[in-house]
Amino acid sequence: MSKFKTEDLVAAALQTPTQKAAQRQAEEARAATAKQRAGRKKLTPRQTIQALTSGRTQAREAREYAERWYQALRGWDVREVEIPYSFHYEPSEEGLEFLTLGSNVRAPTRYLQTPIGEFTEGEVGALITTMSRSLVPEQKQLGKMLDKLRHERHNCMARLLREDGRLHQHPERAVRYAVAVLTLAVQLRDEKAEAPLHVMQQELQKLTITTC
Image (tube, rainbow, N blue to C red; front, side):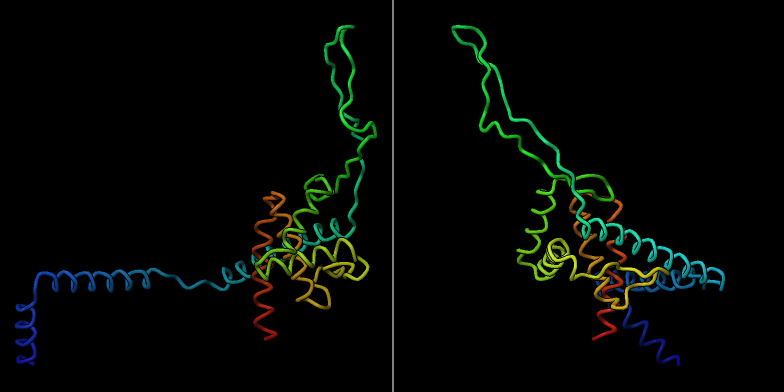
């Protein structure tokens, strides 16, 4: 034992300042890790139940918000607003002259109803088209799903959720549509859709891993 200690002392004496500093940093790191582990407290049964309940609540709220957007896009409820043609006055020798710009036909603008208000049909349609033409495979798939929801709604599921709040009988398909509509919602600057989108993306990942 004494021989081992003597060898340790000799080795320590032969260390360069750089080696000593590295060893000291390693020892400090080990001490910090041990302290961190010691500071962790095991959750009580009550805390565990609360954590699980909170997670389930977030999942339910995310699904319900996705359902609202899904129904808005599937229903595609629009209203038309008649916008009069443009006009202005220009001075002439005989006074102000009334001039029209372009055709005198009124141009209707169509507004789509969404959970956060109205957007022009053109704006929403352009975003869907951009997604469906994306070079990113995942984005392209979501865009095609949204395009189908808009133009072939009768070939899409009527709802993402059952009456009891559970997912449709084809859960992976329902979650994919939830991700699609919430992705569009985020692009339309719906801040409330960001957290639900994250939750549904995680749920889709779990379903994909399970079915693989």
